[in-house]
Length: 55
Image (cartoon, rainbow, N blue to C red; front, side, top):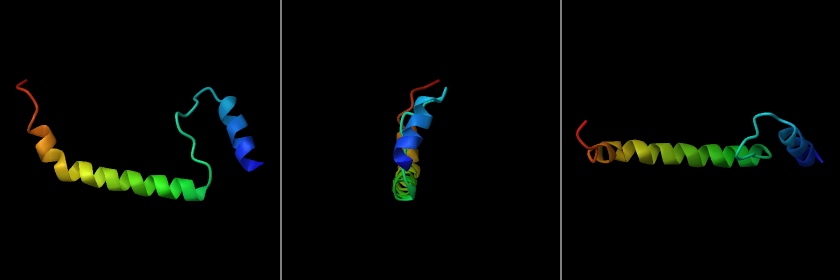
């Protein structure tokens, strides 16, 4: 029931999210995954930037 109400709220919203996390567990899992990804990006940032072309 709560999930359905949340989805109806999103449908009526002017700014619809591309992803909707339902529940604290989902929110926690996604935040942990994003933090892990950010760490990986930070680790390899120097290599990523080394491929930039001359400006």
